[in-house]
Image (cartoon, rainbow, N blue to C red; front, side, top):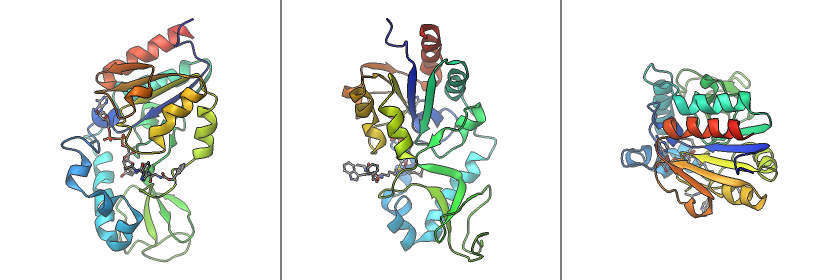
Length: 239
Ligand code: BJW
């Protein structure tokens, strides 16, 4: 039987799947972490020290996401098609805070590192949609206070979202696919080992070998927009 003949699939996506949509990755030579210090813009301590700088960083990324320059690519579309046509369980987990999976038609992906088009109140935890800028004068709809709103994203040292649901799916999956992630950030970087422990076949789709390369059974190196549509058709043909 083909290793692709699966009944329960978990797919993890990272910044690489949105690179061809015009969104910068983090760790490339021209990536976001070349221009910004992680400690300054992606930690609770950085936010406490300089909230304006952090809001500026995310406001800029939100504006870009909503601009005409950003569009879904064939990799997002292939995953949405797989979800629709696959005759089993398929969970899409993304580390990305963009909404490109939803725009491509994916149904309720898990955004384990949050969402750029949402903000939350640091007093109540309540989550709101936001398409404009977050700034110091913006008052919260739940408590009426200013200065309590922050991007609904997960920074280093914070707990990623929906972990029990993700871990339950990983513990039962028979196929695990990681797309466009460097495998440097935990807990996502450890998902391949959890899936292997469950007996799943694992496939890495990436431009190059990731930090978790050696844990995968199979590697498909190349552009996600080219590799993923072929892989998804193979899975559908095998199931
Ligand atoms: C293409 C492509 C194309 C390009 N086609 N491919 C020591 C050991 C182990 C862990 C720790 C440790 N010290 C601290 C920790 C924990 C820490 C951590 O992992 N630190 C590491 C630096 C070591 N993690 C945390 O703090 C997390 N929380 C946590 O652990 O809570 C406790 C816990 C315990 C137990 C269970 C559960 C939880 C929180 C991590 C939060 C990460 N946040 C960010 C920012 C989010 C908001 C934002 O977007 O600004 O998330 S950081 C950033 O990295 C972002 C990304 O989602 C994440 C991953 O990046 P990704 O997606 O892999 O992007 P890149 O750029 O790294 O890679 C892109 C890849 O695509 C490359 O390989 C390219 O080649 C490829 N590519 N074009 C195919 N066209």
